[in-house]
Image 1: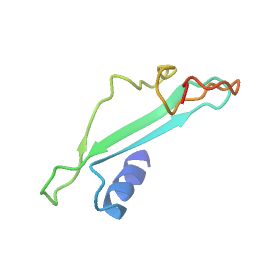
Image 2: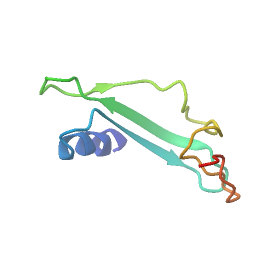
Image 3: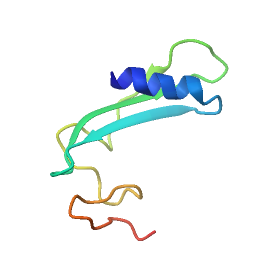
Image 4: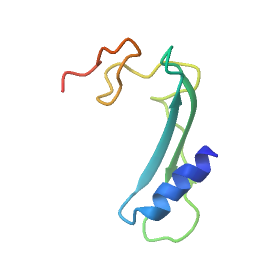
Length: 79
């Protein structure tokens, strides 16, 4: 299902180079599922599935990521 969502995002946004879908447990901030697809530029073939070293299932994301907010409501970013 996650691959289908990411693929749909790539198809619907012509300028998109990649799409990533991350599913969190809202209570623990643990990543429960993740997928990352990249479009090969100039090609109409299927997107390539990438492996992330930053986001791993079963772990919390790096608190330094600008979009990550802890479950306790505290933002990890100073933006």
